[in-house]
Amino acid sequence: MASFSIPIKLILVLLLSSINSTEAEAEALLNWKATLHKDAQTLLSSLWDGSNHCNWTGITCDRTRSVTNLSLAGYGLRLRGALESLNFIYLPNLIWLQLGKNSLYGHIPPHVGNLSKLIFLDLSYNNFFGSIPLEVGNLRSLYLLDFSTNRLTGSIPASIGNLSNLEYLYLYDNYLSGSIPNDIGLLKSLSTLQLWINNLTGVIPISIGNLTNLSSLFLSANVISGSLPENLCIGGVLTRLAVDHIGLSDNNSFGEVSPKWGQCPNLTSLRISNNNISGKIPFELANATQLGELDLSSNHLIGEIPKELGALKMMSRLLLSGNQLSGKVPSEIGLLSSLEQLNLASNNLSGPIPDQLGNCLKLFHLNLSMNTLGGGIPSSISDAIALQSLDLSQNSFIGGIPQQFRKLKSLEILNLSHNVLL
Ligand SMILES: *[C@@H]1O[C@H](CO)[C@@H](O)[C@H](O)[C@H]1NC(C)=O
Ligand SMILES: *[C@@H]1O[C@H](CO)[C@@H](O)[C@H](O)[C@H]1NC(C)=O
Ligand SMILES: *[C@@H]1O[C@H](CO)[C@@H](O)[C@H](O)[C@H]1NC(C)=O
Ligand SMILES: *[C@@H]1O[C@H](CO)[C@@H](O)[C@H](O)[C@H]1NC(C)=O
Ligand SMILES: *[C@@H]1O[C@H](CO)[C@@H](O)[C@H](O)[C@H]1NC(C)=O
Ligand SMILES: *[C@@H]1O[C@H](CO)[C@@H](O)[C@H](O)[C@H]1NC(C)=O
Ligand SMILES: *[C@@H]1O[C@H](CO)[C@@H](O)[C@H](O)[C@H]1NC(C)=O
Ligand SMILES: *[C@@H]1O[C@H](CO)[C@@H](O)[C@H](O)[C@H]1NC(C)=O
Ligand SMILES: *[C@@H]1O[C@H](CO)[C@@H](O)[C@H](O)[C@H]1NC(C)=O
Ligand SMILES: *[C@@H]1O[C@H](CO)[C@@H](O)[C@H](O)[C@H]1NC(C)=O
Ligand SMILES: *[C@@H]1O[C@H](CO)[C@@H](O)[C@H](O)[C@H]1NC(C)=O
Ligand SMILES: *[C@@H]1O[C@H](CO)[C@@H](O)[C@H](O)[C@H]1NC(C)=O
Image (cartoon, rainbow, N blue to C red; front, side, top):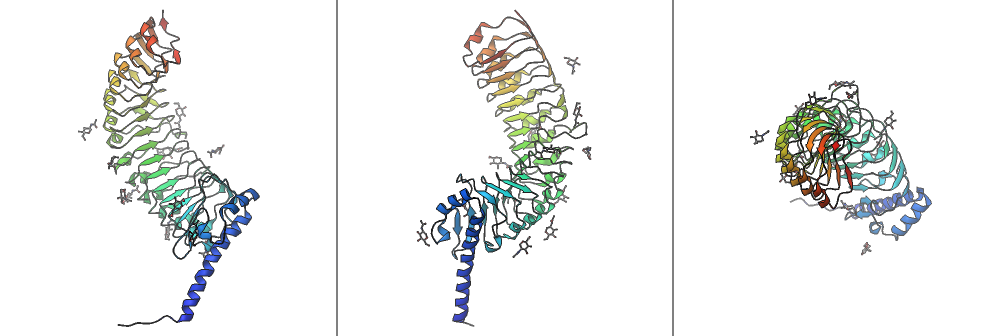
């Protein structure tokens, strides 16, 4: 068996260089501190106390005393200063960089792309501006990237498609423009994609339908056009889909609500309000049995409200106002035992209010205004004892206000105007 010994000199050199490098890391942190605003320096001085930097607040080291974790979020520090002056070259062993909820500003330094061991990168809720450095595409170990709530501009770099371990991507509430890169479809591990409140344009890449682990997709408040991929539920894990306020391009139609989304067994929230969605509400949605929120308000939907929706036992918010829905209010809505908010205002609904609505014991907000509903106001509504706000205005109701309404002790807002009531 071959054996060899390491010369004592080399051991010393290794030891010294390791001590030197940990000193250099501490020095990089102190040098950064010195560039921050005075108040931030004072704060940090009290937390970065003593010569052992591995003991400082927000710092974690590995066994060789090399910094692996710089985490100054969530202490309410509101540190002011730039990140560019933190010399990342001396901190190449960082695994965790969490500086969210401070008051840092300036560009996100391209040098973060050198932190190849990083699994967690959170710079959210600061004042960073400029563009997202394409070097973030080098951070192949990342599972979380959070740049949300800053003032970032420019487009989302296509290099992000290289982050094959990424599970959480939060870029919401910035000023990002350009289109969503097709390469987003390469992020096979992605479970959460939140791009809401930006200036993103173009069409939604079909490649998003390839993300089998995608559970939350939030694209609201952008300027995106085109339609959503039908195969969004390919992996069956989609739970939350929000695409409100996005269909603002020249395209006259944003498409339809796909019957296929009924095959999303775990979908809990579907929000596509304030778009130009047309067509009917597919009755197949009734198969998305976990659906608790369905918000299709302010679109161009036509046809009847499918009675099959009465099967959705988890439904608490059913918001369909501002469409051209017609026909009757289905009595099956009375089967929605979890219903808290029902808004069917500003449609073309006719016929009576079904007695069964009184079975919705958790209902606190009921708005049926601006339809052509008629008949008397059923006394059974007063069984919906939780009601706080009831708006039946601008319909064709006749007769009197039922005595039983006195039972509605929580009622704060009652609007029955513009009917033919006695
Ligand atoms: C600081 O670090 C030393 C080892 O370097 C350790 O013995 C000590 O317990 C630490 N102190 C605190 C407060 O963590
Ligand atoms: C880094 O620090 C944060 C906050 O103390 C902690 O939640 C997280 O688990 C740490 N990460 C690692 C990899 O040590
Ligand atoms: C760090 O990143 C910058 C910018 O991407 C690059 O120019 C530089 O060569 C990198 N340095 C090291 C030591 O990797
Ligand atoms: C991903 O990385 C490879 C290899 O480094 C590179 O050639 C490619 O351009 C990168 N992809 C993107 C979209 O940046
Ligand atoms: C989007 O761009 C318009 C003009 O180009 C600007 O007025 C608006 O503030 C931008 N909004 C966001 C969220 O970036
Ligand atoms: C998808 O999620 C499951 C369960 O969390 C996990 O086992 C699997 O590896 C993930 N797939 C990908 C491609 O990341
Ligand atoms: C989806 O993935 C398949 C197989 O990986 C690939 O062939 C196809 O091009 C991808 N589709 C899109 C739209 O990216
Ligand atoms: C309209 O939508 C189509 C496909 O949905 C898309 O190719 C086209 O670019 C869109 N036009 C505009 C002006 O947004
Ligand atoms: C749906 O959710 C349940 C409970 O959270 C979970 O056990 C199941 O694996 C999920 N199904 C899919 C396809 O993700
Ligand atoms: C949405 O519909 C309204 C009314 O039909 C129309 O004025 C507007 O141009 C449409 N917008 C889009 C993006 O299609
Ligand atoms: C709902 O799912 C069941 C079983 O998967 C299927 O037989 C039925 O056709 C589906 N119904 C609708 C309305 O999609
Ligand atoms: C409203 O519904 C009635 C039938 O109840 C129908 O005749 C009328 O065309 C509908 N109006 C609109 C604008 O959809």
